[in-house]
Structures are given as C-alpha cells and as structure tokens.
Image (cartoon, rainbow, N blue to C red):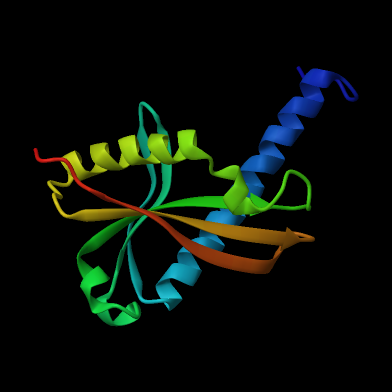
Amino acid sequence: MCVRGSKRCYNKVMKQDNKITGATGERAAAELLRKKGYEILERNFQTKFGEIDIVAKPHPRGERSSHLGGVTVFVEVKTKTSDEFGEPWEMVNQYKLEQVKRMGELWNIKNNWQGQCRIDVVGVWLKEGQVDKIEHWKKNFFKAKNL
C-alpha cells in the first residue's frame, strides 16, 4: 500500500515517472532515427544483462558514408528533464558501453548477424513533457563475434 508522503510511495511514483520519461525519450529517438534513414529493427530488446533501447540499421543513403549500410546500431537513449547530472552522453560510461556491447552480441547471435556493429547514444531533453532538444552521437564500432 502506498501511504501518501511515505518514502515507499515517493519511490513508486518516481519509478512510474521515470518509465514515462524514458518511453517518451525512446519514441522521440526512434522517430529521429527514422527521419535520418534508419530502419528500426527492434525496440526494448531484453537480455540477462539489461535492455537495448533500440536496434537499428542505417540505410546506405541515409548516412553520409555509404559503407555504413551494413552496420547494426545498438542505441542507448538517455532522456533528461533537468540539467542535473550532466549531459546525456556523460551518463554512458565505459561500463555501460561494455554492457550494451554484451547485449548486442546476444542480439547478433539471436539474429545470426556477423557484420559490423556500432553503439550510439541519443540524448533527449524534455521540457514540460515535450521534446525540447534531441541529439544523436555515434560512439563505438565493434565487430560481431563469429558464431
């Protein structure tokens, strides 16, 4: 039971708010990627290590460099509602990159993908529940492990 004003109630409300904020950011990120010519292959891919927010593939003409068309992109979405705790890309440290890479390798196995992969970050800033700003950073390339 949630007693108004209790820590338990506050935590429950905060978790729900965070889910709504995260879902809003992920929808905005997927839309941005589509507009940039990416095909969204999967959203919220669940593994024992966590979740990949978006798995996408750039269309060769959607990227400046056509050789990127054979790349699978694992996208970490960071949604901010304030300026606290730095910029979205600063929230993705080396540990998180390794975690996304491990999850990506599981996606590769499940989908029999052995090509090149990349981890990107999309930062979404919300203001009063609406997207105020959105940015896409291309981060790390890695080769899928042989199956």
